[in-house]
Figure 1 (cartoon, rainbow, N blue to C red):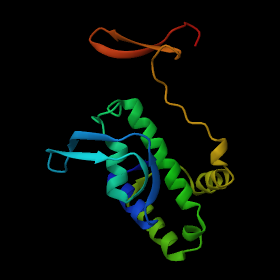
Figure 2: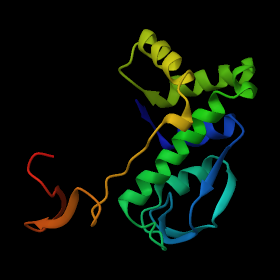
Figure 3: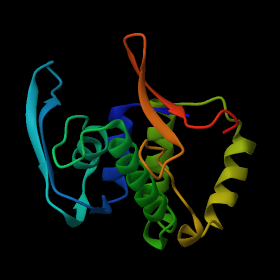
Figure 4: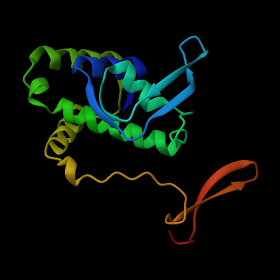
Length: 167
């Protein structure tokens, strides 16, 4: 499934925004603008209600301060956004609103591309509906002392590799 930035923002706005806990505050002074310049964005720690623009900025930031400037931190934030969208989509306010569902389907048609069949999507929806978020484990693989991975360079390229051959 591929979702463009416009759909991402519109879907989140259509469901009334999402609630996300920002684990630590950060500032990104190099966040890209639509005209290929940069702007500064900032997030405070704590539970926040995010509209589409804010959620996209939170999930796309690549140069955040306070340990939020890595691809690993960005991946973790993206997981938080997806979990919040799932939670909101499965809430009774969204599921019982024919207008919201109709608008979401319209957005999906014009902004989302996939090779999933309608039957695949129905099956996934059934699976996700019964999924208990407190039983879901998310992992971002990062190098470090307690990690099975280490950082190195292969030629001139940064790489993360397993510490043992059979991992």
